[in-house]
Image (tube, rainbow, N blue to C red):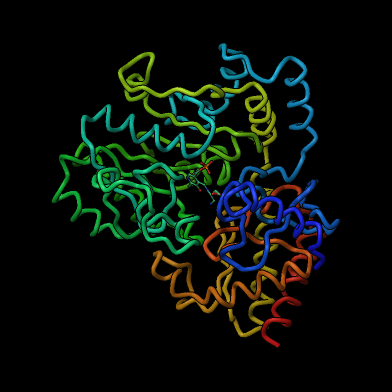
Length: 432
Ligand code: KE4
């Protein structure tokens, strides 16, 4: 691994940007060493500042389901850019993307675009509080919903990676109404509601937890959340920033057959440009300004370039067999990894939901994790050594033991086979 140019850029970066990065997990604090700086990307590949090429499974943390720099998205953004970058006036592209989203996800009768997943979840919570007149929110340990104050308690992405249990700078009052319970634990949810039920505005959940490794919902979990919300008059918010348009056009709610009241989106619907969204039942969304009393706004919400990228992306996803083809690529990868891991005494396991996968070391069980505690009991130190060994083999996973990997439709069989070989060689170098 050459790191001269990245190291030089890093030295410049830390002089002017906290930690040298614009999002903490990129700093490699979770795996040690200095971050690589990327100069360009194409298909399944990223290229770093030292001219090294990697098969990439970070995929910008989820948006790049079509791989890096897909022609159709680049052309759409270029066409839009010719007419300007932002207007601050209503535009047709916002309507077009909203029509794509509401057609794909029937529970989303109306949708509002924002510029990040954080804005989406923050706004969805405010809408739920405004609609119900209640203040409390139930969230789950290990889930991550962005960095709005109310959610920064036991968050599962950057915060957990950095080992910060809560977060400095968040006043007690901001999390006083945030009730955190273990994921997949319906008894804990029931107990929380029996104590606080008529003060709870919403339950917010990642329908597949992807920020504490990969923790699928138990069969009764999501239906159980739906019924407890109905029983106590709380709203069910599915945070589909990752799962939305990833598990299928209808996202996790279609995949599992459970309908939330509100849904948040991000990542894929922007095709790599900054877009988030929240939406749901028409009667709920009517509280949103300018229709109703819940204020939410954004200078670049519905930005024409971001809308163009999102429209171009969703048009590709709407093609028949897109998802069956994508998921079969991911299955080929994890089937191959299963064989390699077995040849190394199953020192690690790989779990998969659709085109999302997660490789974790010395798991305590021979099944996917059911909670954050199970993930935390894994051998993160061994992951760190494996991460660097795999990087030396020309393959990137996320620089964190708590993040998942993403397969795109740019990952061809040749890339998947090369990845399986690279994992085998990396394990040999780590395990001896
Ligand atoms: P953003 O504000 O980062 O666009 O979205 C926040 C968010 C909300 N909900 C879920 C389920 C999410 O996964 C995220 C953000 N995901 C992380 C990685 N898992 C973003 C990567 C980063 O923080 O740099």
